[in-house]
Picture 1: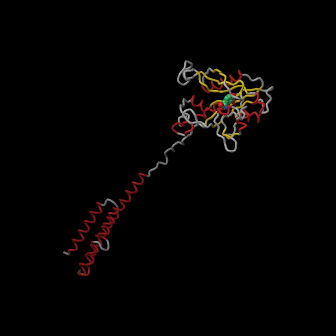
Picture 2: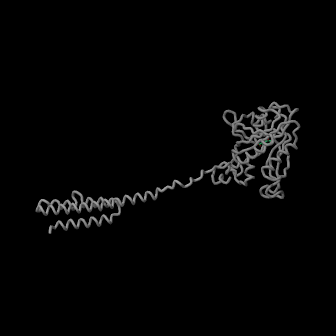
Picture 3: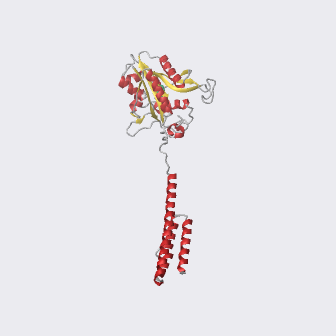
Length: 342
Ligand code: DAH
């Protein structure tokens, strides 16, 4: 027997064994090179062909071809198995069910200050008031002088002002919109003006450099403190959704005479005193008063014919009370964990 028979059979067995045991596709290529390659085991055998008798050469050639074929077929089918396993793994990981309902869109919500603001706007619109807007960059005249606060007036010191280099300023309150309203619309006038105001304040849990107020003004004939109290009580009852008890104390603002601080009876303790009202039973909320005749005159309204009331609600403060928010910085922070609660 030709010793090449044994070489061929051994090469075949080893090749089939390694093909079956291949863990990755690269293993197959190594087997192919080693067995079928130009310098592979089987190629070694064909080198001896020259020394063989013709019929022996023919038999060897046939055998060699048969083994080559067998190894090639085994390689191909193992290769196909690797490919289909890879495809299955890919389909598994990239699987997508197009019939599933889409995730719902993420819905935004209104900021707590906006919620209160729109509520108050709706209420005042229902009572015949107009909602006005004014610029956040104001002139000194609108913010101070026309409100009876001339340049040398000590009341200017009470509002730490951001002055701009051109002599204008960031409005320190919404009261300049009173002036704009009176000058533009004239009497009789019922207006509110919600908006952002700015003060050069040290920031802490209850102070911000940027916060919201809501200004209100009514100019008509024979307006009295009784009218003022009526509208303020209506406002507070609607916001707090219950009857609130109010009291007026004298308060000084150059643009009203008389001027008041309107307090509400503490909604937490109902009167006897608690930490929220600092044991007084009352919470200061709403400065207001009857419009100073000088203010009417400076905006072209005859104080002999007309008078009115005005108020300046701390909108930010009110939102904090209504929603029990104990740090003002949350309102400007843009933290979604906070905002998502509204
Ligand atoms: N503008 C005042 C402030 O920011 C608040 C104020 C007080 C407004 C009395 C008014 C008012 O309209 O009548 O301190």
